[in-house]
Each structure stands twice: as structure tokens, then as C-alpha cells.
Image (cartoon, rainbow, N blue to C red; front, side):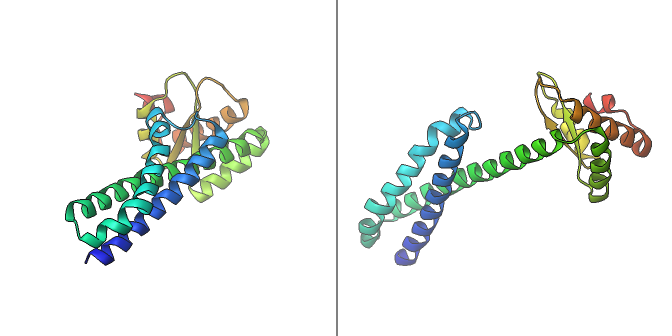
Length: 184
């Protein structure tokens, strides 16, 4: 049992270290603006702990069939994998949002009309909300109407406002609801 478990732990740790290294390298390209304090503080130590377990403890200690060490290593490796996989998925989410915003900001109002029709056909509607404080209620309420909300902060983009007007008209005509009612 311990020999098989050793290979499971090694596989999980190597996957976690791989995801963690990928995330660390990609997020340092962007700077720490995209990582919250907890993630940035614990990412590198998590990777190092995983590497230390892989290279120093597992090969020797599992031969002695020590249950506590084995299951501790398994628990640490699973936590390492979950944290690093979460960061990797977070990176791809940020990358998707950045790509989408660049695409939409480069369209003028006439092109936004075509893009809105395409999004409506593909059921990929978006709403770009602006302001200092984002509204969780708006995000949750828009999900009920299959509209993805993007909280963009204080910088207002006229092209995105044009797209928002199409969304407002769509919600009013098809759902009989004003966007202001969804904020509350």
C-alpha cells in the first residue's frame, strides 16, 4: 500500500509544483496586482515545501511505512495541488477577461451592434458596470438573465457604454425589467 501511495503523493506533488511554478511565473509577468495578499505570500513557500517533500522526505520515509508521515505528506500534497490549481485557473480567467475587454474596447458603436447580435445569438451577453464599488447584487441578478457582468471600476469607456445600451434595451423588451432594478 505504501509503495503505491508514494507514487500517488509524488504525482500530486509534482502536478501541484508544476501548476504553482506556472502561476508564479505568469503572475510575476503581470506584477502582484492580480494576486491578493494571501496568494502572493504563500505561493512560493508552497512550491518549495512541495519540492522539499518530493526530494528529501518521501523517498526515504515511506520505506519505513510511517503512517503519520505518509498521510501528512498526502494532505500537504493535496492542499498544494488545490492552491496551485486555483491560482492557475485564476490566471486563465484574468487572461480571458483581458482579451475580451481589449476586443470590445476596440469596437465602435456600429460594430458593437453587430457584436451584440452575435453575442445574443451565442447566448454570451455581457454587461460592463462602472463605479468605485461593484455590486454583487447586479452580478448575481444578471446571471439569472444569462448576462455576464464585468466590474471595471472608475474608468468609463464610451464603447462599452454603447454595448450596455443594447443590453438595457434587450432586458427591457424581452424581460420587462430595468437594469436599475437589478442593482437593488
